[in-house]
Image 1 (tube, rainbow, N blue to C red):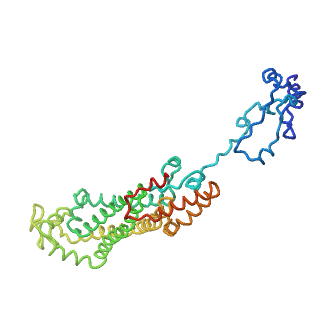
Image 2 (cartoon, rainbow, N blue to C red):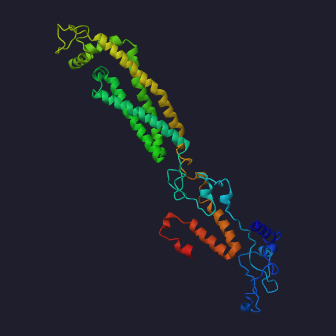
Image 3 (cartoon, rainbow, N blue to C red):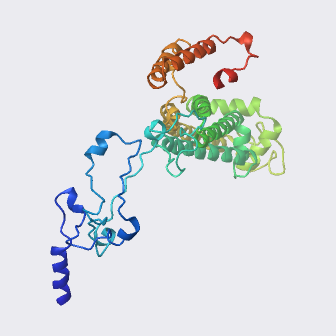
Length: 400
């Protein structure tokens, strides 16, 4: 209790906030001054106040002066009110830190910073700040998502086509023999789509707008490759499939092709073992196996239905990929255009006289007209420099 009373008394008597600048210093009546301790060393000499050469007269006059001689005898202590705890510990909330704005113009055009032309494809000047703030923008994320989708279904289509070519599935031989043109078109479409997606990944990860422009153009060709197999299979399925299969069995397929279809579907001949049959261990004239027309027709209907449905279902996804490439490929970074100064704002020979005249005016105000005239003469000699006298060095002119 006594401790609290004594601390309250000290706060009221000694640590009262002053109302004027002169009350920041304690007088001799309140506290002992340090001037008495240095009286025997200084003697009768007085100290003059330092007058810096860079300070203006008005600033010196506006500053509250204080005498340091023996008549004043004031101490140089500051009215500092100590606190028992830090504000960081007492404050219930942490102070909010201002987040640095990403790609702010003050980072480049701020005071004391020169404008640098960098070839960094990320759109940031090299050497400024850390790389943690260099995050992907929303357009780059859209490109990343759509190209990932494009890569997935292109890769899946290519894998399925390769598995069919190598007879991995049960009835892959029937598709390979009976639907060779459609399978070739689908394989080319999947391979071209995968190649296009790789170019897109190169442009996205390297922030290369040239690659992204090529990627956007190739997406249209990939769209054509995607639609063509779907159209061919739909046309074959919808218009006289039975007649097309009969023509294929009698004229297009060789004996090896017929034999493979007969072995996979478990049939013999087209209508019966006596009509266009290929002789094998299970297919002969007195075989009990049925003809291949019904089974082959049912298989082709199911296969062609699934084929063109898959192709046409991928069309909306591919259109979304194309739109994302068109709208976002030029905005993969925050940099606008190529990061170059527009031609209308570039400095040329017609701008040099005005710039030189402005510099000469500043030199005349600070150093005199002789220095300004010398500067103008040297500037005229530099502007009249032609490629014919390229051997002439400009270093002696600038150093003199």
